[in-house]
Structures are given as structure tokens and as C-alpha cells.
Image (tube, rainbow, N blue to C red; front, top):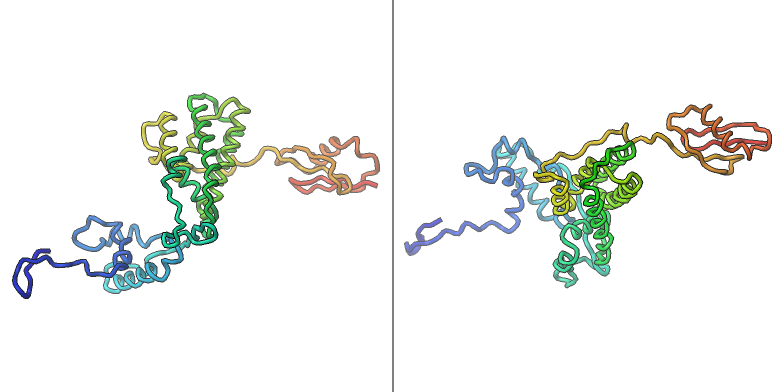
Length: 328
């Protein structure tokens, strides 16, 4: 703001940047939802729609500074009628720290790992995914550059799976429908529970299953591939965008909604149960998941007919798990 000096009357510029460092970070989340508003801090309409923040994710070191001050500011703004809530964040999640050689990674300690070389060798998608895979997000994790190799191999295997099957006209089967629904269910639940490292291991697990299924069936259907790409998009956005285009789409992968799942389609048609004689396992047998007890016992005795050499005194069936024939 241009003005004049109150002492000498010469042209001057008023200094407005006088607030302490933490002032801005104490209310920035309010401004984010209405940053073009030049009449007020935040409109009531947008504040009611978007605020308070559903979840704040930050390190424990923020607790005394940013989180404490933001509460003070929010309560003050609530008291003077600017906003209708008095707590800035509904839920808090503290992530752990990254340590190297047993010490917290920081510039002051000189043990910071520059990402530039890793990005050059593996790409930023692989680095991003490895950072999530390194350990449970709420715990401290030991950084090891070698760990990125496994993530990089997964990315390449998934890329090859899609590229080898992107023009395939294979129709979905019961197995692929079951696999697809289980994948969406597992990944969604792991994300919602913030078990982000197991999200990555889940992707690896289901990628192996898709590869095996593609080899068994001579291909894999497009919907299953597309679903996997959409699920991966938040974690490897560049790879997912590329594969989405390769699958024939002219729009961004991020224009999709999150896939849903059908629990009925996740169920097995058959399950494996153990066959025992006098409590000792003699083999296994596949049965229909809804098979009646009498049918299971009959099938089990037929399967073990050559081993049933005495008198049967009891027949035990633990549904979905074990048939035990007690003999004298």
C-alpha cells in the first residue's frame, strides 16, 4: 500500500507483512475453500459445504505449533461469527518419521536422501509408491534405497500385463469377476483403514493373480484391467494415465469414479476341507460352499473308502473346514 511517511512526508510503502510466521498456517485451510473471495475471509456457504477439515494428516512435531495455533484462530473466528464451527479438524492422523541408519532424516543431520537420482533411475511413480510401501504410516520407518527395486519390478510387470492384453477380446469369467470384486474390496478397505503399506502389497498380490489368470485363460478381460488401472491411479498417476490411454480412452483416468464391489460375486463356489480319521489328516477334498452336511459326509467317506478299515463310531463335520471319521 503506497502512502507517505508520517515523519518526513516523503512517498513510502506501508509494510503489511507483520504477522508472525505461524499466523498464515493457522487459518490457510479456511482460505483454501474460497481463495478468490475479495469481500470476506470465507463465505458461509462454502465454509458450511467444505469445512471443518475431515482429516488432518501431519507429523507429531506439528502438534505444539500449527495444530495448537489453528485451534486458537478457529475458536476466535467462531466467537466473532465468521464461521459456524469451533474445531478446525474433525480427525487427526500422525504419520511416523523416516529414519536412516537409526537416526531421524533431516537436513541438520546431513542424512537426507535426495530423490533426484532415484527418480532418474526408477521414475517418480516408483518412488512415490515405495515411500508408501516402506512401512506402516503411523510408525517410524527405516529408509533403504534397495527397497525400491521390488516396487519397480511390480510396476513393470503390471505395465506388461496391460500392454499384452489391451487389445485382447477375452470375455470375463466367474474367476475374473470374483478376482475383480475381491481386489476392489481389499484395496478399498485397506485405504480406508490407512493401511497404506498393505495397499501396495495388495496391488502386488492381485497383479500376480491377474497374470496367472491371464496365462490360464489366454488373456484377461478389459473391465478387470481398467478397474486395476483406476485403483492404481492415486498411487502411480503417470503410469495409470498412460495405461488408460493405451486401453483406448481419450479422457483422463481421474475422470472416473472409484470402482464398487459386489460381495455376492466375491464368494467361492467351492472350498477345500480337510479329511481326517481319528483326528489325523489323510487328505483334502473340494466341496460346494453350500453343500449339506449329509452330502459332505457321504462324499468324504467315498474319498477315504480305502482307509476306512474299521467300524465307524462317529462322523464329525465342522462346516467348511473338516470332516473327521472316528473309528475303532
